[in-house]
Length: 104
Image 1 (cartoon, rainbow, N blue to C red):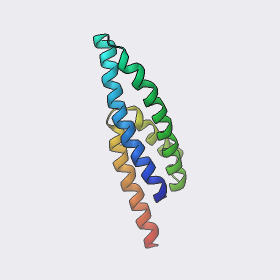
Image 2: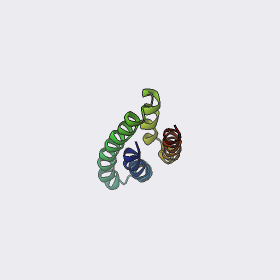
Image 3: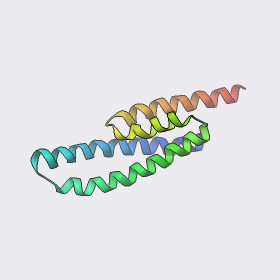
């Protein structure tokens, strides 16, 4: 489970930052009629989000979480700043689970 946590954490931060960049590009596109940046950032964010989904499912399967929780973690990458919050919650949860396994 610990081996799946690091890729998830990295992707949560990368997707969170890219989502903020994409949000800025969307404001530029629809607020100021500047389309260039969003045409570049949108597909990059889409690809990175797919990698994030794989990392989240991988971690969730190794941690044996419910599908509802895994889905919530996956959806956290679609709301600005929420991936940062969920990354912290997921990391704390995994560390608690690992400590409980070590104590048992």
